[in-house]
Image 1 (spheres, rainbow, N blue to C red):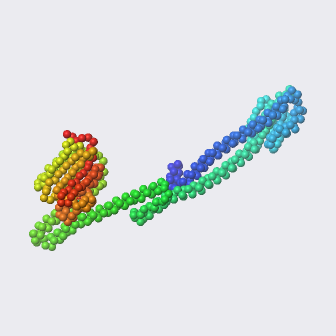
Image 2 (tube, protein in one colour; image 1 turned 30 degrees about the horizontal axis):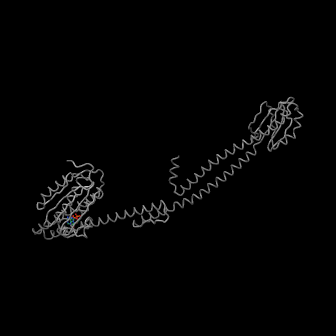
Image 3 (spheres, rainbow, N blue to C red; image 1 turned 135 degrees about the vertical axis):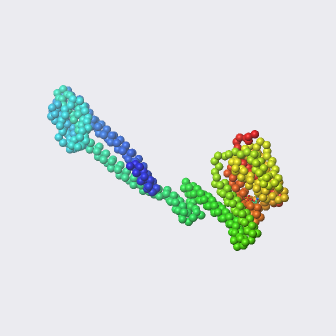
Length: 471
Ligand code: ADP
């Protein structure tokens, strides 16, 4: 049942929810307050009625007590005038003897015939007379010549009238308070929800018109302005990343198109003449295979770059750069015997915080570039120095260098300084982008210094692992 109500409440529009909660809170508070007030007033009134009846009976009893020694039946009968003076509204006063014979009686209001109850002790009780509540107080009169009972009966008309008035006043006020709270709640909820509705409208519009749109930020500064700002900032980020993705797909397709068209050219050449001409057949097949391996490298680089961009480094491995650099160089020396590799590593270098295969990937990219872009001087150096919690690894060459204006762009995807020439040596324009992405993932940085015609030095800084390198 409660679950059903909660479910129904949750399904209501926010405005109704706010109004309902506000009104119920006010109603409950008012109800509790009224309940307590009603009971307190009721108790207090009842007390007053009891005090009043007791005072009346004590006053009359004192009067009779003063004459106790001489008091006779006739004296009692003669007190009718006195009793009338002492009487109050809705009150009956009478005196009867020990047998229940009424000697004197004065009543103010309607009282039915009541059976006398002679008593020996004084009592005050609450009774019901024909459905009407009343107090009845009895007091024994113990004179020397007369023994009887003084009785006062007091209807609670006044009390009931007062309580009923209070009840109606409270009910009317309660209903008015609920109505007022509902109306003001409705107004307040409308005011409160206006910015949220505006935000929702803005978002809907963006959904329909495309995410170049933004939600208008209103002047008044509150939590919802903050929300709008956050939403707009998030949209900026999404748009930026969408544009970057789009650019990437465009660039990648463009890059893939060149080798594919070259392949297509060679294959149609083969198709037309190559079948009969062994020279053309040989040349075209060679060229096609070369183009295919370039295509393979491009696709592979694209894959590596995408992985580097999306990878989250969870557990950081430690790598000994000296060991690894020596291994890579010894392999390169075999493949490129005409190059001289120099290694200048500081002693006792700490391990770095990077997975071995990633460091290997970066080092190969940098060394491969130095090999590709070297001229007559084929000396390539690798150095590593420690620098305040980091190790700086640099690869430098004496190759063609990069023009100053091109340096800021070389980390961009597919950027090649001299496209036509570099295509020939197999460059895809992705190597430095991959290296940069990887270095950033490990909280490192990459820097390139180059002079056209003199040489290039690429340095990467990588945080060191906490403990020192094994000796
Ligand atoms: P690529 O696969 O074409 O080498 P990179 O991203 O590694 O792509 O490099 C981008 C461009 O930066 C290269 O095309 C080249 O023009 C230039 N470059 C990179 N390294 C060197 C270097 N050591 N010497 C001269 N130019 C370089």
